[in-house]
Every structure is written in C-alpha cells, then in structure tokens.
Length: 137
Image (cartoon, rainbow, N blue to C red; front, side):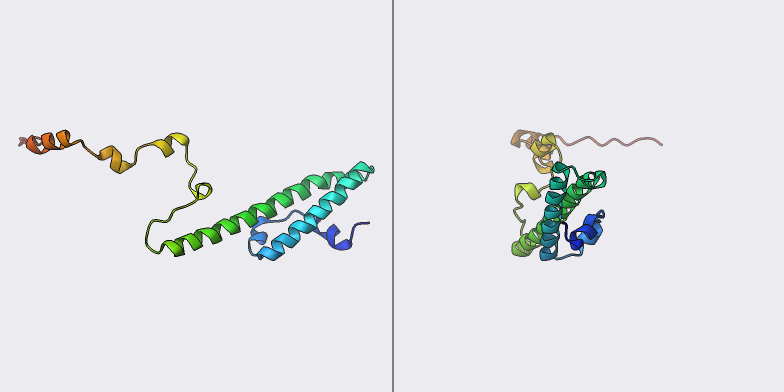
C-alpha cells in the first residue's frame, strides 16, 4: 500500500539537518510527509495497526519542523536582501520581521525623546547650572 520510500521517512526529522537542504528539497520532503500523513489517516479510519496510529503525531511534528525551517530560510533571505537594498540607510523592516518585545516597550518613548528637554527647561539649566562645592578631605 505505502511505497517503501515513504516508510523510511517515519523517523523524527532533525531541524539542523533540514537547514542545509535547498528550497526544492524541503518542498519535496514536505510533499512526502503530507502524503504519508494522509496514508496514516486512512489507516486510522480503516482500523490500522496501533504503531501506525502513534506515527501520526511524529509525522505532524515533522511537517511542522519542515515548515518552520522553510519559513526561517525565507526570512533570512529576505532580511539579507533588505539590508543590501538599504546600503547604509536605516532599512524598513516589515512588521512580522521586527522584534516582538512587549506592547508597552513598543509604545514607550525612545531614549532620545525621553531625554529631550523643553525650551524653558533648557534655558533654566544653562542659566543656573549645578553648583560645584569644594569638599574637605
């Protein structure tokens, strides 16, 4: 029923091994894993062996790993392209590529904005600087 090529891929896929693969290899592996998953689901409905049912979880996780590595590769390629295009200027990064941090941190004033003084405060600071005292040792 299941081709022998698919049976051999039921081991857990390692993410570090996937990173060295090309885009076409990843997509090919994804296609194989999805067909394997559909075969396992058919086996589940038809009352397949218990070992096949336990492999459904492994295959789903493998699909997730392949998709994750694929997306990471896409993002790194896009980021390098954006940096090349910017060439010294500050590059605009799409929202999904920026650091997430927290909502409060994202809305917080920048350091420059927080340290800025009003015109009045700047005049006062320059007119009345902090006094310097000579201390006896």
